[in-house]
Image 1 (cartoon, protein in one colour):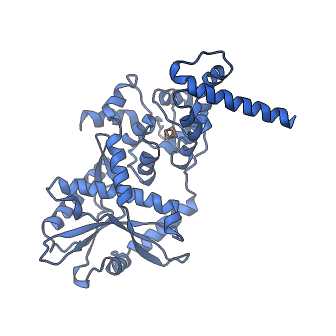
Image 2 (tube, protein in one colour):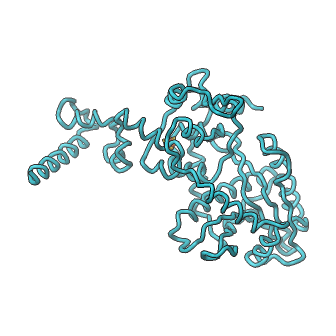
Image 3 (cartoon, rainbow, N blue to C red):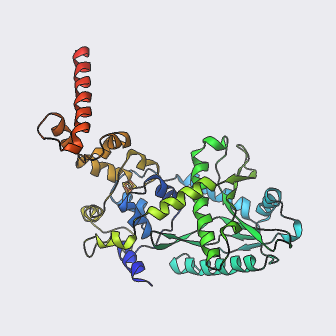
Length: 384
Ligand code: SF4
């Protein structure tokens, strides 16, 4: 284990790691400047469990009914032996009958970190075998595990499936496709936030698969820019597959990943001994005092915006913190951007009413604030 992994394990404490998923990856592009989230995600910390222990609403929690619907649809598509999925792939990718075959990796190892490593090693061996020898019989890998470098750290990712499409033997090359299975109906692909989240998720899998193949000298175009999205047909429970172009999201995610601050730098800023361990007792109930956990969170730098509610389990904690500290970002992204450079509402008010003198850089912001204040006062006078 590297020293970076050991430091992240210490942050997480006794709980098993939660791998990156659709939300954590979508959040990377939504709020790349949040150090708190970068650290928690890199350490595989269950943010929903933190929110629950802090006694806060959990904005992203899915109902049991929704979860079982997801599982039932995925089972319908992948079992038995991926028959339905292979049929869909034959139609979507034009696979010929003799070349389809199926390998399920979900049974490799058990449900812990070493199992992820085992499944990654097995996935890697199968993928490289297919890449080196396009006549390799394995066409569909179910429940593979990939690895992506996120802020200098190896994050394990679990796409639903990877399909290998053989080209003619003259080309001596095949193309890998990421397959995602989602239980939501797609009515308008261009205006569907769930499709966008699925595409961002797939973009991360594409980058991870390219990283794997690059380690063996294969070029990026061995992995398609298009994902195969399997969803129910309209509102029925019949699955259908669509090829969705993920090129823009791949480019955007790649840019964001490149800009993420390095983890060692963030870890160095934490006080020694910082941990987010909930210290679960023998009955699995956390024993860590809430105030202690909140104090540990306060050692990390958040970047709250109201949009956090769409993608982060800790949104209500960070919102209260931003409000209690009177931080500008609690008022929204537009206000934060309009008066960039001012950190608190108290400072903005003091500059507006003249209790504080603006620096040269702040002069134009203060002028705008005073104008807004005058408009507000005039409106109130008019109403009165
Ligand atoms: S809710 Fe908090 S931890 Fe999550 S992204 Fe927003 S600021 Fe960061």
